[in-house]
Length: 313
Image 1 (cartoon, helix red, strand yellow):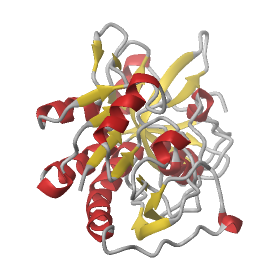
Image 2 (spheres, rainbow, N blue to C red):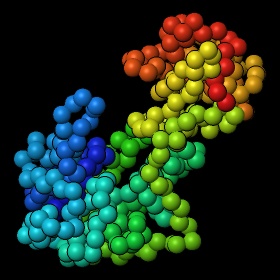
Image 3 (cartoon, helix red, strand yellow):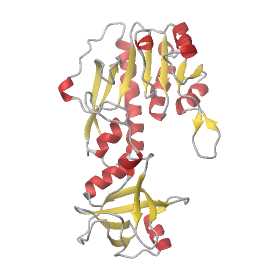
Image 4 (cartoon, one colour):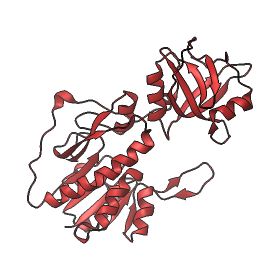
């Protein structure tokens, strides 16, 4: 089977590796987003998929838009039977979607039609979802609306953040895509999505990382989990000068104390306990502007933080 792979971030790597290990499905080429700076001072680096594809000895095309120009010409020349897409980061046009005889297959980490869009895992975490799913579908012009070829339930461990859950989804999605590819020639009966159950998962915004302690402790912990690694959760410590605090880890605190939202109730080995609109949260790992990540207790000691201090609510 003549296959081509389109993908960019880490979640796509397990599927790329699985396809490359089986001669029948080894991609003729890999298309990915162009190299970009991964840090403020660093040089442009290839995407995660681009780097791994190079290690696997696969031809790599870094393209701004695969649906037109030289990129499309290169894709047409490959004459793929199927195009596999995992978190590519570009919307595919008709010229690509209708090119392969088996179409374009996409892995999406949600139980479609729920959470169509760019951030299904992050948006599900924000809403406190635990029971979700994973889907392989055939792409159509409408966003994430194509017929379903394979679907599995997936429990999103509430102890894991978005980075960990996306990695888990990638690992689970690889065998699902391989199973789908193996069934293509025999024919798969697709199942159309139920449009009445559609929900959307738009990309995260910078504001999604803002912590408001007037919310419940559960909501705050879910927000911290959802916005890793970007935009990252941030809180503001009030005082003579407001201090921006990046929160990398938080958990619900078992505290009998109460206070106004944002009030520091205690500082202990686990971290900084802060009152919320409902319950309290323990901030476990923090980072100050321009500083390394540290246990919250160490940050509190450095700031000479005491119970009664106040975060912006």
